[in-house]
Image (tube, rainbow, N blue to C red):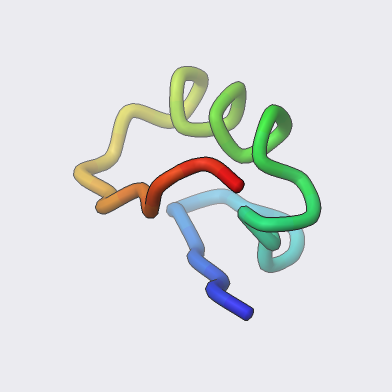
Length: 39
């Protein structure tokens, strides 16, 4: 399962399981991150 991190993240965010949350966090923490295709 793909996981990613961003600066200030309390825990790893699982994109497959928590895609909306990861997307929201990517907006709050604008760090260059490669997002996989949504499930």
